[in-house]
Image (cartoon, rainbow, N blue to C red):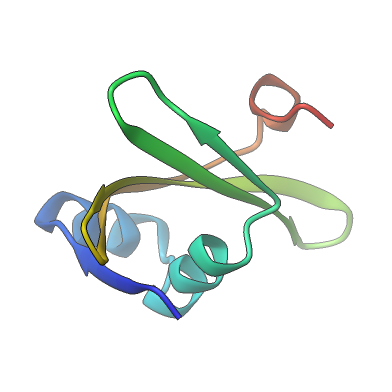
Amino acid sequence: MTNLVFTTHALARMALYQISKETVSNIVNFPDEIIDNEDGTSIYQSLFEKEKSKKYLIRVVVAQQEVLKIVITVYPTSRTSKYTKK
C-alpha cells in the first residue's frame, strides 16, 4: 500500500465533504483513472454511487515525493462527464 501524507488543506476538504482517509487511500491505491498533470501532480479519481443511481466522482490531487504521496486536495463532483474519459 501507498504511504500517504495529508496536507492541512486536504484534511479540511475531507472533513467538509465527509470523505474518510480510508476512502482516499482506496482511490489512490485502486483508482478508476489517473490523470498526470504538467506540474508533476496527478489526479486519482473514482466513481461512486450515492443514494439510488446518483453518481459522483471523488478526485484526489497528489504530489509524489520519493516513497510518499502527498495528498494536496480532495473533492467530489457530480459533473462526471467533464472529468472522465469513459
